[in-house]
Length: 164
Image (tube, rainbow, N blue to C red; front, side, top):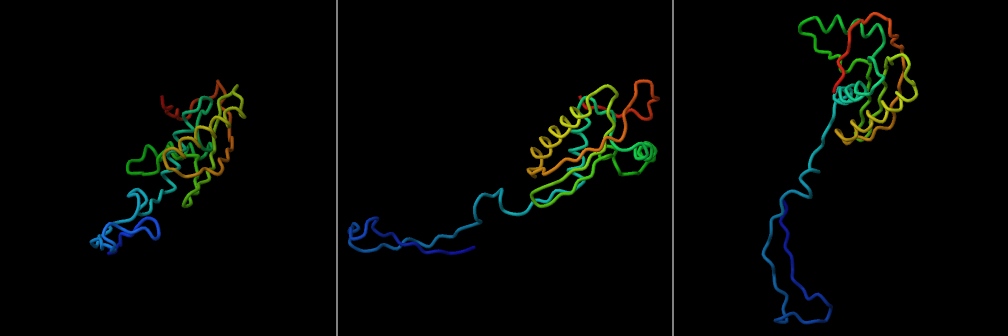
């Protein structure tokens, strides 16, 4: 807390105040400083950004799955083991989070027949919009690696849930 004393003075130099004297204002106590929302620091963990990006990427039509074939296989096994904490939501997503910016690497599997460049563009747009809206971080880049194409006649390994 800081204590300040203020003086009332005429607004224009040379103009007399009502009684010709300066009047002393009582001491005031100032608490805090500025907007309460700016007092303190907010940190966002890499895993939070990875979850947001993973859900946003999976929401794009044409994205069949996230991650490489090996990571999806291990993930399917890990998901069946009780007590494991690594969520399939973050599979195929890696985030590097700084104080005000973040960069993302995504690995996706696309459905056969879709335009890979269109899907990658839609994933970028959706991921950037979701991460920036929810975290306030600036997304400086979203790198997308397409690791596989899901053919219509391929056996389904582990269907991923699509958000509706």
